[in-house]
Length: 278
Image (cartoon, rainbow, N blue to C red; front, top):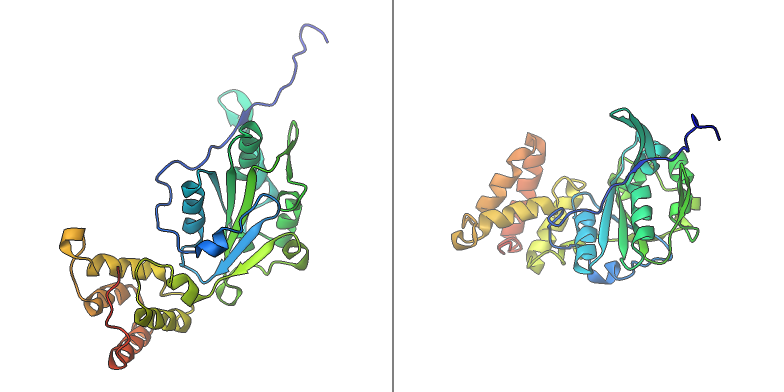
């Protein structure tokens, strides 16, 4: 090597785990399903939209003292979005690591910490791209970066979420991917029953609304109703469930509002909708 030649070394910019306060909702996915998370194979949770799947995973990780990385997925992503891409930083060329490679790096650098990597709406990833990062999800547990391969031990847990296939705009997960993971399908009533103190009668009403609207009415709306029905001493408005319901459904178009009102009114006649939302 001459004096003019310099040793080439990649400069990395790694992402860090979520900070405290990112995702603060109460876990909705039942504990029995979250408890199967493990470092040996990925677990993908499927449930209707708006049910709090991802926030449940984030909070489960926090409650169990894990370092959490969140990979948000979309249909236009390529393999490099997960691994990382070259970019300019001033006059330097650096490798801006992706969320996935950063989680692997963090787990490798912190073997005493348990790391949870979450793929939010994993079925939005194009099948060919998902196949290209297949080593992330099975027992190989590695990812390739410019300087080589990052292999992790048993301190990295991989998970994913997706909307139920009947109301999802994503791709069908192919057989080769499903063979690598555990799929957990969670029903609407099962999710609602874990939500704060929603009573049995109101669960029937909310389930009916979610099924009729294909997930447009979700647990987010239930949470909004909870704000309106909470007492003023607890920071709410102290409204009745029916008053709160009317505020919440104003965001929908006429046809959806009409459908929701019919369900709500019928529940009142049958005595199923008179419970408050906590």
